[in-house]
Image (cartoon, rainbow, N blue to C red; front, side, top):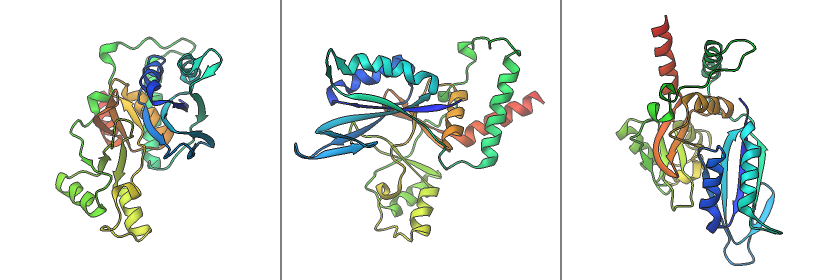
Length: 264
């Protein structure tokens, strides 16, 4: 499955309506960025586009087949006759780093096997039964450990050790901010590769932000496809725009292995 990033730049007063419209058209997780200028003369640039004042930037990763319906629906929100109150566009999503090749292969084999088991050659796949669909909320970890973006790396490491976790969700600073992710990978890069100081560097210096988010009702199959496409190890799970969990690639693989053992 191929994915596309839909980007929306809108005034804050239209933010909620734009999110709801996109979700009705098929979007799940929406990441909110803030493009706030200081003073009327300051301009901000995002994806090569320049805008002024306070604007909300919405970022959502969706299946390529959903991009056009979502953009058409957003056009109704952002356009008022001859006047435009914002803009929306889509860009192709290319592969990113962060997933091991052997795990990527397992994911793809798992999804292909599922296709073969539910479809006959030349015939459409039967509709999935709602009760039988494994959802993100079924596998996610609800007890998410968070960290302030202003905490030092030493404090973040101490939290990871005390809570026995390999990653932390970086807290939002306001309703228009996005969540972030801090894992051992980012910590090692900052401390070892870049020779950073754990007492001088803060979480916001090395965390991945914005983190990719998905809705809790999304099927695990679609979440796995998203992770393989973007080469991600973890997805932040939200309800609306509130943090409710964290979905890890290892948890999906563990479930996949359990199913394989049961079938054998």
